[in-house]
Image 1 (cartoon, rainbow, N blue to C red):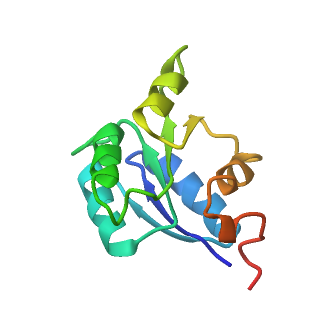
Image 2: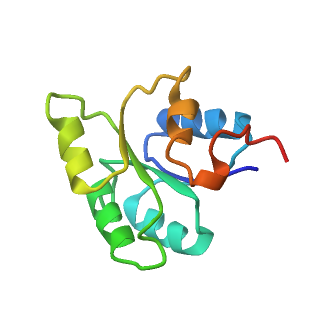
Length: 132
């Protein structure tokens, strides 16, 4: 069963890689390139999981996360941070803010999809997304 995944990423090369990896794994993917659009897309799309850049135009990833957590319909959606912030303490700050996971850029294409799968809702975990 395919997961519905929303990607909020303003950097085209990073976004294209994320979309490619997740679509090749059989997931249904939509993307936006700014934070304000991310919140609206989450409301319209009702994704199973959101992959969110921390530094985006319009509204940063922290603002997106706050807006999602404040909306009762969206509060339980896992939100994974993908960021160029990779200094000591950045992972801890991201997790303390409420993101479900932290991935430093550049992501590892060999492990990203499997690492992301651990954060999918239980009924979507451990399955090849392309399997009906």
